Length: 267
Length: 160
Image 1 (tube, rainbow over the protein chains, first blue to last red):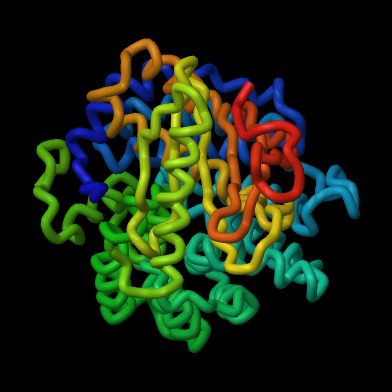
Image 2 (cartoon, each protein chain N blue to C red):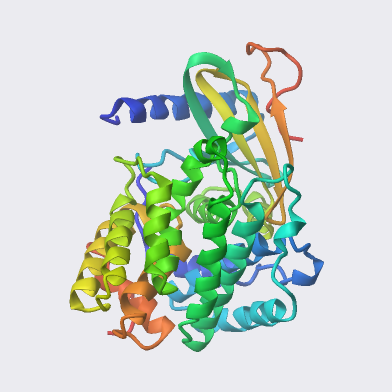
């Protein structure tokens, strides 16, 4: 079944069905170990609202999450018992926590939140370094599938050297992966920034080319909304081309060949 | 048909699994089937008559072997938020034909992050690993042995 992106239909679904039935946000009922995935799942829906011209509807719910996160500590890595949990469960949970915090601050306040993203990728990299050779083999698929999100996070954290390290450690073997151009761009961009280049016109143009090639065949049908959002932030907002989160995300509609510009996107 | 051998095996595995779901899990409605090669996402998403959601992954193996927990799909923490979005997409597409009461129950489960992940062996692999996700949290995992499959005959892949 071929699936085509229809932003108007998606908007109606979120406006009429998803947002009205979204359960109350109950962070206080969550354990420290389960909170990060819970927050990230909620954030995936709310960041998607920005793509659908529903930012005003999402904001109060994001404020609620932000207040909840600011009123408690991030998860303690020691909460995951060694030998009983996945080797990087605690680290990836903290990665998710800081990544979500950074993304929410950006979505709500147009704050680049570089420090939050930096904490995120540093702790995740520490987690990757805990793996035994056997765990690296077992984890290869997950590392590769979510490498793009790590690379985009490194760029938006202004941590290009870490981006290169993630790419090299993932040992990408994905000749048929439709998302591979994003990984290749991430590797190129991290190297470019690590060589003290700025996020100049060349950086933005290559980023746009990547996004044009990857969004419709891969990000959208795979529902990689958070990753796609992070790439747009790294390409447009962090380079100064755009000034707000909403403007940054709606720029995506300039990069979707064959998709009619929806009415909710200002010209 | 996919033009690559690995993708062709994957496609045959998905078809085989879809037929097994329809034949063996009574009343199950398949709401998404058939990813394009190279996309990320479950092979199949189905909904039961009471709105319970299951995402299915087929693991094609040439050698005869039973599915083990280490071979299961969508492990780790990263896939859960993405799977929830993929389930919402599948429900949006199925809304036109799903009975409204099933749609509403399934939407509630999707929003609350309640679903099952089943990794089923295809090709010469058999049996399955079932994981339960409640409130976006993985809470239970067990191996399921299909009737008639090699390796035993206790239990089944049917949901509670």
